[in-house]
Amino acid sequence: MAEVMKAPKRQLTYVTDLNKCIGCQTCTVACKKLWTTSPGQEYMYWRNVETSPGLGYPRNWQTKGGGYKDGELLVGKLPPMIDYGIPFEFDYNGRLFEGEKGRVRPSPTPRSGPNWDEDQGDGDYPNNSYFYLPRMCNHCTKPACLEACPNEAIYKREEDGIVVIHLDKCKGTQACVQSCPYAKPYFNPLTNKANKCIGCFPRIEKGVAPACVAQCVGRAMHVGFIDDTNSSVYKLVKQYKVALPLHPEFGTEPNVFYIPPVLGPKMELPDGTMSADPKIPLAQLEGLFGKQVRDVMNILQAERMKKMEGQESELMDVLIGRRSADMMISPMT
Ligand code: SF4
Ligand code: SF4
Ligand code: SF4
Ligand code: F3S
Image (cartoon, rainbow, N blue to C red; front, side, top):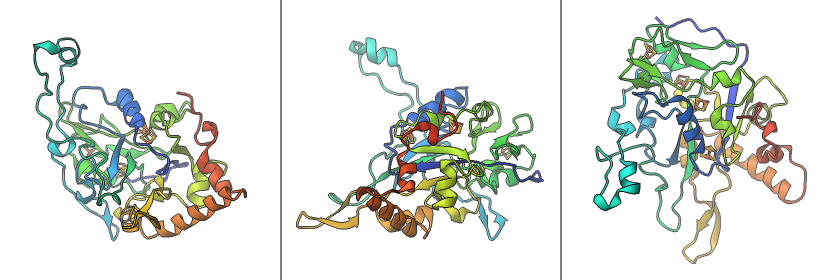
């Protein structure tokens, strides 16, 4: 039976501005280097940045199932390893210093992997489009992983709402992997335990921003406690209501939110002139963030126009984020 969950006293909340993410993967590498370098974790990317539209990582995760329907927990699929991408060895020394000895290939030959379809997107030139979608555990208010675990190994921290796996209690059942609709718990076959994003809680306890946020090159990430009315996350999620969760219909109530991409290029007409319609289809955004996205795009456009016309816009100032310290708890790394 799953552990009875106490509501946390505070909730750490993340916002990613999709208009500013440049897909550089610095956040991915920061997380990887810090937390998932042990044997059995080679295939794991607690933080990943995928191209949307695209297959994602693991591929087709958006249809794997899990989450809730009408309040009932759903059991989804266990993604096979090929959907994550089987890690390969590569002889860097041979490639860099002994190249004359012949061709150096990855082994086994990669057949899939994270970002296998990076930058492909969809549509026909010149009106093809895509944007980058950074993903991590959503530290949900209704974590399906927690409810699914029969060994009470998952809990939501009272002090910050971060969802963590208690490794001493984990027996490798993988119900968490099945039931998380975002495919964010990962099974380590060598330890027979599941691992997932820990919200960088050892850093949070020291008052320092998570590694993925602090290292963000695009200054696209905000983090803070949602009850702090001075925080940028409060302003974006609660005050201006322009930050939306990914796939709200999954029913887990994520605490990771997104500013939808409103700044994309416009459609090109057959005569070569530009139309007023964005290349990124609204239907794609509604499929990711729900019907509310239309209103959010209108608010963002209107506030942007204000700023362009020299008027004040607190919302645009928050999104511009001139000082890292205004976007996150201490950005020290
Ligand atoms: Fe659990 Fe998945 Fe929600 Fe993370 S995103 S808290 S793993 S249900
Ligand atoms: Fe990784 Fe920390 Fe970011 Fe979670 S919060 S994705 S553990 S860097
Ligand atoms: Fe996007 Fe920032 Fe990650 Fe780069 S570091 S991929 S800009 S979220
Ligand atoms: Fe529970 Fe997942 Fe471990 S279901 S036992 S936390 S693998």
